[in-house]
Length: 78
Picture 1 (cartoon, one colour):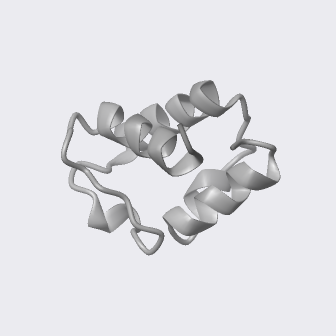
Picture 2 (picture 1 turned 135 degrees about the vertical axis):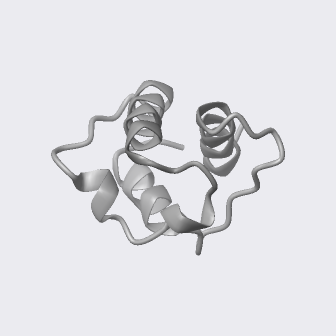
């Protein structure tokens, strides 16, 4: 499974939305239910799925899904 599909699966689980389709341009306001609790759940879900660790507000500072993907690629996720 490629990175996009794995990431999309994490988002679908966290936001309980099987029809959620990610695009590189998407931001938090584009996803219904992305609040502070969902943000923490998403952070932990991504960390577990990809074996990475976010530092401080690293996830919150990313501009969009595309930037998140580049972060994951940079950490060796594929």
